[in-house]
Image 1 (cartoon, rainbow, N blue to C red):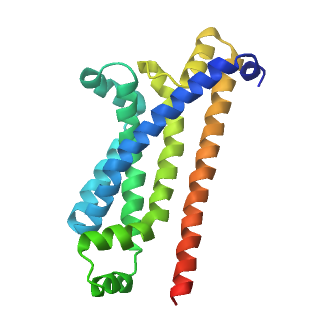
Image 2: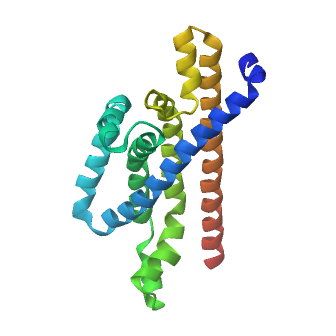
Image 3: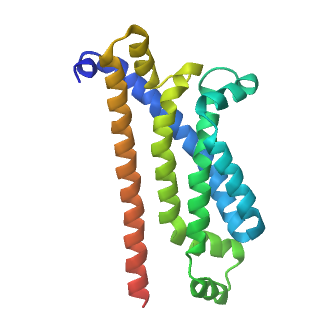
Length: 213
């Protein structure tokens, strides 16, 4: 804490860099992962290969994955963002598919009976009901991404990893602890904030169902 209080501007700048890295990666992963989750819910034979591929990519060590991407995306934030987006796919795809599975068949039939098209049913019925599950997947991906992003500094990605690696290089514990504390704090805020949002949606859906019954 002493290091954070003595260097507030530096710590805040690196924290903002970290938030940007993870935030952009999660947006990209969500833009890809949510449609993929919907697709594998509709086309069942795709479920196993898509989830297996996402799982395999998730197990690749981050340093190795950075090295694979560097020839194509160069050194810097772009490579870090792409890698984080890939690591975030598994949780988002899996939870989206699970959320779509949880939509009651009777609810879908009622939407069809109202004359909704498949797209309207997806947009107005299925996605809102699956949203708590999707948010849970985004929460898991975000918390994991905050931890993985610390390694991004080795390819010039910036973020809180700079404090950690500067402390290791100079053999000072305070920068390492400052980077670790801020990373844990970001992870806690993301876990609590997104988890709370998912809980609110679940409560709203439960209240709507009770009013409907």
